[in-house]
Image 1 (cartoon, rainbow, N blue to C red):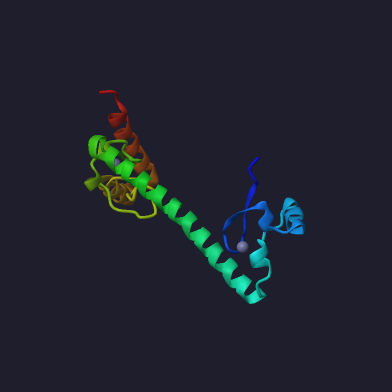
Image 2: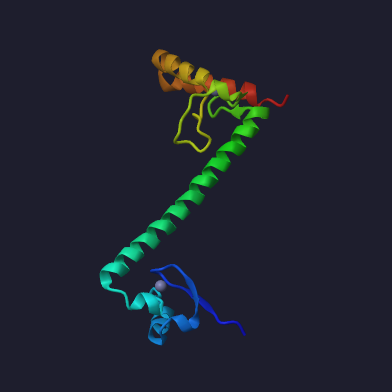
Length: 148
Ligand SMILES: [Zn+2]
Ligand SMILES: [Zn+2]
């Protein structure tokens, strides 16, 4: 049978069971982090530095996968928009990317509503308030949601 391996939380090496003290392994079962026998004898200050380094590296790796997934998602959306356009949240029309302003906070990097709707919103809001805007928006939606 192969030795079960464990990862030291300081040096981040995955080592066979024999590289850990018995009491540490026992505590680990109760949820304590595991320290290999090499790291266990290090001075506290060295140990703290090592743990900090490992934690930072782990966090960075995690962040990189999150950021990578975000970029991949954005690229997939952009590819989709290139063929069918992006559906405007207000008028429900499918429009090319060029018809939307950028918004870095949105997953696809664009505003939810097309530029024409933004403009129309401002005008109708000024003329007849939200009620007028909602009426106009509904009319556009009815038009654009109609099956071709
Ligand atoms: Zn270690
Ligand atoms: Zn629109």
